[in-house]
Amino acid sequence: MVDPTPIRHVKQIDSTNTECSRLARAGHNTPLWILADEQTHGRGRLNRSWHSGAANLYASGLYQFSQPPARLAELGFAAGLAVIETLAKWVPAEQLRLKWPNDVMLGDAKLAGILPESGGANGQFWLVTGFGINLGQAPNVPSRNTACVAEAIWGAGAVPTPIEVLPDLIIAFEEWIERWQSQGFEPVRRAWLSNAFGLGQTITTSDGRTGIFEDLRKNGALVLRKADGQAIEISAGEVFFCH
Image 1 (cartoon, helix red, strand yellow):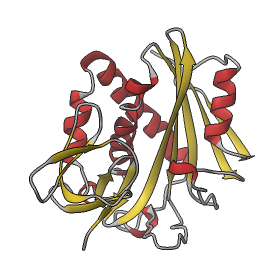
Image 2 (cartoon, helix red, strand yellow):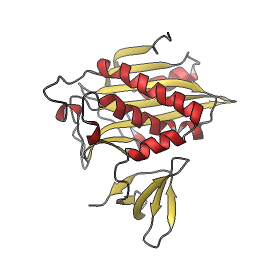
Image 3 (tube, one colour):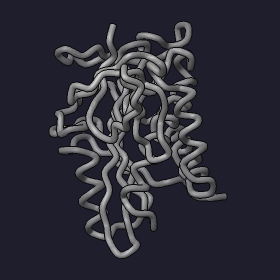
């Protein structure tokens, strides 16, 4: 039987991703997870601050790979799938969707965010994947809808604690990593598309382009079909859904 991946549980830290990155650069053994009750400098994509109050999950996993960072970015999509599979134990799975590139939605509100970061050289690369999951509290974020597991939990069940959720999340994520290593990105891509938020709907990108969200490329880029019929790839930034 394979030993479970170690979890280091701390009360407070600046950022679980930052701590994992420090350990990676110091040559620490992998895999390893950091779980924090509170982050003083939690962060999300595009260097946004991540609200890190009580009752929610803040954790990051550190893994070593031979694939370069461009490939490792594909595991951000696998991480989203792992969150949905894990939370389906407490929340109706049909209410959970994945918003490109790395958000998990409950209805039309953000339930979780994922932050992949990588580095390394000479065939030895590390990947840190940060997870922020709103379990008991939906943070108040200006101009953004947020949600938490407590709002949609099955029946009258108790809201799970981070330490209850994390072991299942690690197992689900590592199963997706194994699938990705043996079969490539395609199984991840297919599963992600089957859970995609807003597929076929009109979106606007953060740089002002508008069109139909049509597909996900093999490199993880979003395919946007413009009104003139041209298909363009969106590889970075953010997308907004038109109502």
